Length: 257
Ligand SMILES: Nc1ncnc2c1ncn2[C@@H]1O[C@H](COP(=O)(O)OP(=O)(O)OP(=O)(O)O)[C@@H](O)[C@H]1O
Ligand SMILES: [Mg+2]
Image (cartoon, rainbow, N blue to C red; front, side, top):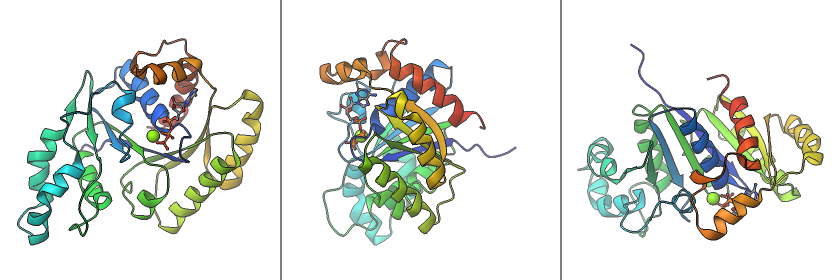
């Protein structure tokens, strides 16, 4: 029997482009299409994803907290990642209605045995054997790529808004994955807060940088309103523009798998 291996999707892009929103929308679509054994990982130290999913952060254990606590043992080599996974990390995983969540958070201390990013990479690799789908919401920037935290991901989704900076960041991400030699099975570009009139420009740009074009999400008043009111995107109405468009590119991204 083949070993189970979760289909892992990593979400990247410029700050504020819509990574967290899109991670939440994709989760909602997976759940509504009856998928099970889903893990979402908040890999952004700002920890916005729990908020967007209506999960209370207080009292939750993060990977950063575990790494801080176990630092000495890990430094002395008396503790193994595998053992940690069996115990504390497993306990820190939050069970929600239909999905699990792991929060990376951040570490306090300096001079860790290994950085949170490399610690997370080891943990994520082990977790791929325990789920069918893993979605990872990363922080803006490139460190996770250069540290190869998402080297186990199958799909990289680059999110851009309609801005020169968004396009520039997307291009840089594409260059970087080649430099550090991460071999995603697929790399997609999606435009968020995009007007249909600009779609052609975006699809041309995706060709130019050599990634697949996934589609756009228009500006959606419901997304903004849910955010302002602190309501979970899991409850966004199904006729919301963002949800309708996200379903379209969900098909494109997951079609092959
Ligand atoms: N399609 C949309 N329509 C309306 N508002 C949106 C849309 N997408 C995102 N937003 C809003 O834009 C803001 C930034 O979105 P989001 O937090 O998803 O971006 P991000 O890329 O995760 O940001 P960060 O880099 O800070 O993690 C949020 O307030 C969100 O509610
Ligand atoms: Mg975010």
